[in-house]
Image (cartoon, rainbow, N blue to C red):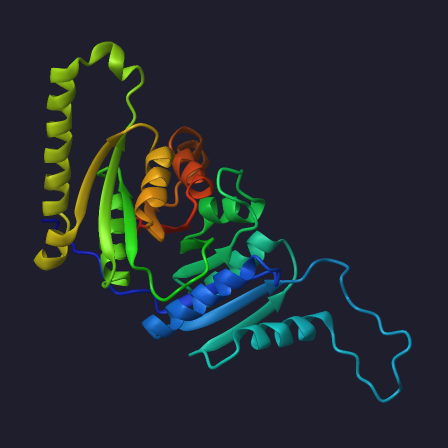
Length: 290
């Protein structure tokens, strides 16, 4: 068992990033659902497009024309359509990714929620990729329309400390969900150097490592006993996608530290491959740097 058990408590402050287009509606619904489930503060940030201020050349003298910021705030409140605990609105301008990061830091938000206009298997947009690389907060990329809380969560692991944090976060944030834990080993040209007997031996070794990883993860015994362990061979993004499609998981959880450029060039590309490849919501849990 690890000496320092991470907190299983869900975020207390959530930041929803919205551009008010249609693909943001699902992220808004999910952020509201999570804020209500966790009794968390909900911060909403909208970044104004440059040069988008409305003009009213024929407005009557008694009319005070609303600013673009005021109209954006009005639409956000209308879209929320109900009371949201601890609602805080940020309507700002500038580079969208940097404005989102600044709003999250100012509000001390532990989770950023955003939608994506990209379909699965396509490249990430600039804002999503920047947040994956730079955000100190965890990041939830929403694709699916919410139908209640998450019910079937697939957690990816490479047996590192940060992936253990991802598992404990999934268990603590979504206690009612079924949990599956998947390790994917990508062995180039495996069939050329592993015969059937050695392949079976390798599979047993990997499952033993998985069981040891689970045993060393600070989870309540009853939660640990319900985790479904899976060991697969192939590309991580492919195996995760296939499980989601066949078993109808509604959330994939991966985890990472916020590291420098060299790490992302050599190792960290896995997250950037998984997020666009998986056809459901993806949560990147940001592990504490210590």
